[in-house]
Image (cartoon, rainbow, N blue to C red):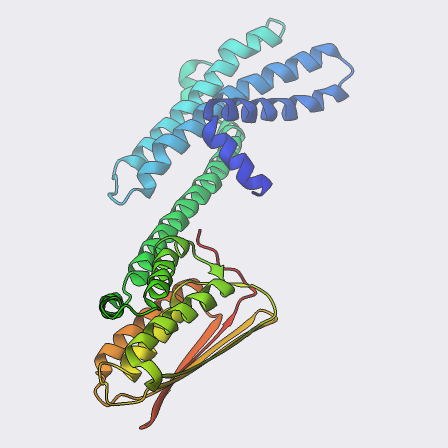
Length: 362
């Protein structure tokens, strides 16, 4: 957290204390110049003048900040706001000069001295504007600017939080769109194994349990270790092999120089898409899938190629790929490339990600 954010958090949590500290700081800043005076009377006069002007500056500052600005920035325009601004500004400057002549000057000046009539004070617009307005409202505008900066920061922070929550919700929805047929088919296959008392039944149940544990519990964060995704893919492949026996040819090569972090389930979605549209439900073909995964110096590459099942539906494949692209756009904006290539014989998807900039939404 930066010092600026710490100040914003403090002023938000302790509003009254923050305002008192601000105006006390302003008072000390203006009074400090009186230390150069040798005459104690002059120091006393400087203190009185500072208190006097600060009182009216505070009045003007809160009037502008909490009465005028909210109405100027509101979507529904208030036609009377400008009239109120002019009238109240005049009343503040008039009261300030009236207080100067009839309250402050009798305290700090030695009589006899002349005092202007109230009517003359009220109608002397050049003096009210040229001296009192500028002096009082210049300090008030400084306060208003600080408040605007703080409010703008809070608004941007809330907007980012809302965008983050929206992105997280969308990611959860996208992650939940895995093919439910995988679970259905796997359970049927395990059931078939159990009927014939196959020795791999218990192992298959354990692998399925590990996959579900990973998807339901260990993939909730924005990033997971690449090694976890590799294990997930290997487990998925081992279960899919139950459907195709020796007819299925899967080659999975992986090379990583570090256990980096990557968005979860994107790779599994690509693998699932490859099985779904490369093998499908056609038991008459010998599907072949080749997977290459590489992570070197934060440069991640994932390439998967599968033979084409003539029965697969192109539109269904597009939905799966659009799901993947949506996730990539949200997590790795402008830091990834994703290309697909389809021929009459095979379908290839290639994903490259620069993992150096960690876009963490959590």
